[in-house]
Amino acid sequence: MSSRWSRGRLSVTAGPSQRRPSIVDGQRSERPKRTTDPFASWLPPRPDGDPLRLLLAPMDGVTEHVHRALISELNPVDTTLDRRLSAVDVCVSEFVRVTDHVVPVAVLWRHCPELRAGGMTRSGVPVFVQLLGSAPVELAATARRAVELGARGIDLNFGCPAKTVNRHDGGATLLRAPSRVERITAAVRAAVPPELPVTVKIRVGWDSSDPVESLAAAAEQGGAAWLTIHGRTRAQGYRPPVDWPAIGRAAAAVQIPVVANGDLHTPQDVAQCRYLTGCAAFMVGRGIMAAPNWFRWVRGLDSGPPDLPGLCSVWRRYAAQLRDSGASGRSALCRLKQWLRMAAAQRTDVVALFDRVKREMDVDAVLNVVAALECRRRSSQLTISASASPGAPAG
Ligand SMILES: Cc1cc2nc3c(=O)[nH]c(=O)nc-3n(C[C@H](O)[C@H](O)[C@H](O)COP(=O)(O)O)c2cc1C
Image 1 (cartoon, rainbow, N blue to C red):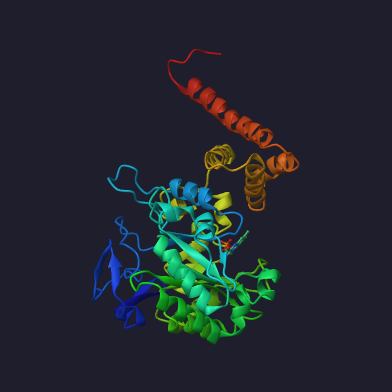
Image 2 (image 1 turned 45 degrees about the horizontal axis):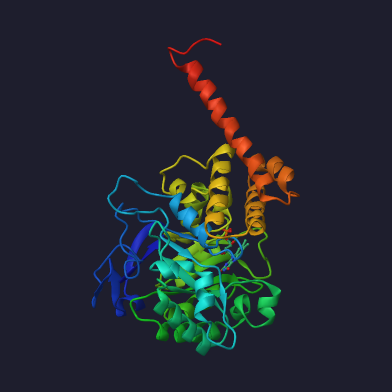
């Protein structure tokens, strides 16, 4: 039995996932139980009972392993629980390009160092390895190697809009041929042990959303555990508007769960997208750069994103963790500036700070500016709490 949310209500229907063995809390059962969680065949149940599934998007050059670890760490559900429970359900690695040979182990380790730690972030969030390419045999062999190394799942990228990637028959190019999406998915599915999910990520189409249903059907026929859809065409790049209704059309056309993606910046966006698509699972990318606690916020555990000094403290922690992981000063500088730039595109309160540091060539200079802003809040908080406390000396 597989189940699917429809406009916020659950409908239970027979579907392909019922024919596969399930893994729940590490235990395989040959006959998955009837369940209200469409992801139950593939992910452990959420102990907090929240029906939402929230995934961290892969962003090449942004969500590397230090970033993934930090975001999962910044989104705990309940630190008093005697188990690690994150508001993040799954992270997906940046794409690993597969061409005419099986990707070497060292390359997989470099893209996804979590493979050396059971395929999970420090806070216990499963990390899927994302593969991009069009050669079924090489993709399948690379997927098998990744799961042998410890990947918790394989995600296939059919959405990358980069011209260099598309020219070499990778990423969104495959959206022009749903049958190829199906063939590649089936080849990878066949190479990966049945208890591990193979998932697919697409856009709504190449230059129109017309084929979105047939693309979704192709992913389902190929055996995808779930399908993530970024609500834009390849021709659109990252320009507005995002087309959530097209995601809804695809979700209505298949039995596998669909993860909606694109411009989900706030809980209100998620609620509206949920209404328009019927999806109960959502993936966020750029939104986390303005609200690193996005997962807690969407689950109603935080009332909003951090203020600017709060963000500054996140950036300092990120820089420290980058250094601990062996990143060079230059690489830390680029990554930090990139985060600030992406946050400034969404938050007016970050614009002046980004303008001030964008030409800095030294990571410590950027961190000094960031630390000064963070301290300013601390001292103003101290002043406020000192003057508010009844026994505080005047002046
Ligand atoms: C800088 C950048 C890098 C990205 N890299 C990847 C990638 O490696 N694999 C992938 O499937 N999508 C990639 N994406 C697309 C995102 O995963 C996501 O689908 C898109 O940003 C829309 O979601 P958002 O509006 O929440 O950012 C990238 C997006 C950005 C902005």
